Image 1 (spheres, rainbow, N blue to C red):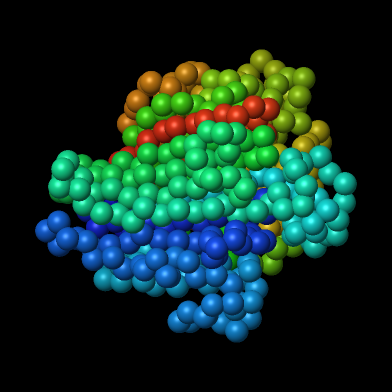
Image 2: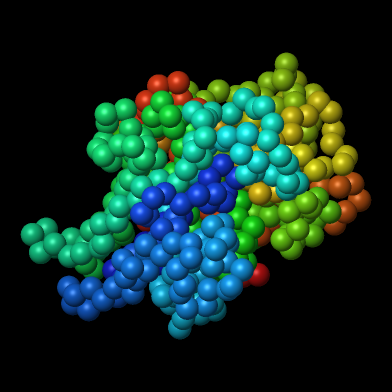
Length: 457
């Protein structure tokens, strides 16, 4: 059974949205003339005629402009306005008659990794902090801006019998938006022949000198509640939430350009939220913890986890037959299977040595388990060697994400009941992580599905 409203991306009537995040997953400031960085392209199809659900006026709504359902507290609050605009766009796109729950859209998520530490915009593990001196990319005031966003509304071309639309833009607000010329650039173009196969989402992401750390993902998020890294009510494609160990993910990925040595390309990135005592998150950013696990398939990404850097490894690894191997067992621990592990900054009983995760890039504390291709993952259908699925190696993957994620280490306070690992976001894409030169990544994603192998929650 599929957890998605559009299993395998096969419905001709598409539902897709866009969200722009600053370094700590908020908005901070709107780009001039762009409105709030939330947009959607949703339509029903009758023969070859498209009935659009979202107007361009809806997509251009910005802070101070009312819309149905907008609360007074959000009207002039840039961050809260974007949250409620996402809910409003979701209401226009929603497929209400699906079972067991309604759903809204795929989500194109774009994030700017610049952080102006003098801005006071980002909390430290959920705690509000003032300006400080820090070592993050930022060219000066305004570096945390949202992008210019251009929308090519989906239409039907009878020349090639194809539906096609897209979002594109740049963070370089002084530019003309052209590709190249030293400007950052992003583009997602979706296309499909009517009645045939899957939508194909074609992505491009280019960093620039001013914007060296950019992220672009296509996400299947929860259709209500929190999603990965987002501490507000969300909208998305998942009408049921997958729970470890009982789900698989199927997708076809064609990486044309990987994005250079700093491109942490995620074959699959899963996100959720639970407290250190195992309880579900409730919106308290001081005690909620975002949990991520990511499989990085760029062969240039090396394992930071090693016998001489145990702090970059999780405390233990669990094999498919449930044998626990501790990280100081140098004969047996699979160091090469882990790029990096970092623990939540608000955890009270950490096992040394330990690295805690960056406290600023999420609205609350976070824990990250980053994996690399390795033979130890073979049983789950994951890549087993460097280069699997990389440039020119187009593959359709069936990943036992539920099985693997049920055996990953995630921190919990001693003596507490294990958290239910219910995942509210699954996504594919890349994080070009502070490149020292302009880099371009280009890839296509299709056939994406989340398959429940026994009833979900």
